[in-house]
Length: 224
Image (cartoon, rainbow, N blue to C red; front, side):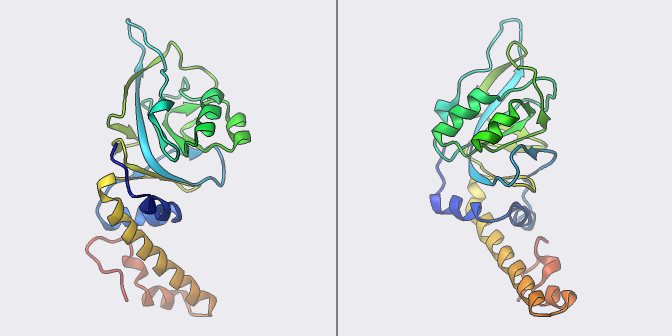
């Protein structure tokens, strides 16, 4: 995995996913993952993806695998279990181990269990839902650090995962600096609009002043 400058990750992590999403739209990049929800309210993460691909277990067998050694502190574990809702690929043992290692969080195209334990440990997880049935003998770890899919979005190893109460967004590693620049500009515009409104400026006028309706539109300037 190619490591992104730590300052870029830190600054992206300070932004709400709504601004990162708008920046992706502005740049014509896909990245908004539909349908994943936080298991820990109020959590916010930003880190590079360590990717795992699961498939249904075959005649040769296989295991759910051990993979935390692939990740460094601050990384995000991203698991593609093809959206399965009938068996889990994450539970309390992984939660405690990942928390101890400093992993930022886990994002699952599928389900997890032991939600109470993850909340107790303060470990952030985004998934389709929670369930109890184990994935052991049902799924097998097919590959690590390969392209996977979250929702309809491709995730390559090292891509930036930003997630909060609103959504999960994927920023291509090669465009992280570009997305950051646009997202920070959008955030500044929205803060300027709010400042005007708090000063008594009419909403429509505040939006007009700062080009609100073009903030996420491709090929449109960000305004005055």
